[in-house]
Image: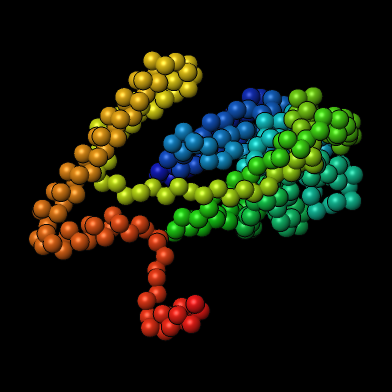
Length: 339
């Protein structure tokens, strides 16, 4: 904790046997880290599952690993249960000191571990040597679609290298563009092919070591990707109009009529419909008065009322984004020749 820089917070999972040891995360203070111990067998594997939150919204989740040197077979037997919290996580990272020679793909146990990760939709980033002896013992696993820049820096005071990485964040657009979302054609799913796909995925020997719940979730995901693959649907972003006259009082009236509208849709009662109509007419009249008062004050308080009057009328009668009409002589001649 003494090494924690200013403006950062320290979270740790102490080793429950022996003296010292454990896992720790140091993150910026504006991020909140919630963690759980994902493994209770430190002689085989130490694991810390964590979630990073900012303003109560999830930023990232991941798994921090330390596996002591030794046979990989015991680690493979408990690894599915350790990884289970992240099986369905769309945006996550797994990192740590695995003490597995990832560079030796001829080893059957290493190949089995990498194949399992590939089946669960995880990929090992880079693969360069992270140990002084020239082996890749430390690893970072992410989803295949995540773009990550990995930097490996050798250190003098340890035989392991320092791994730093940066995610390639998408640049936010300056102007509004159609928002993309993923949809699935659920109506095209037929029950019998779905059952056959689920059964095939359930009997897949590559996932036999997972728990029944994890195998079912993974099977559902793979079946959906096969029978109803997600596709991108562009939905238009509704541009918020500039409404300086819209006050908090109008917002309250709007909420009241929307509440009455929901009540009427649920009950379909005539009395509820009358209340809705009255609330809607009250809201519309209040909006009309607020707009009238706003533009009247704006014109009367201007230094040049006539100019402000024409500018306001032009802004109201000419909507934003209206097409420009060409009125040159050449254009008029082309129109005349066409007819």
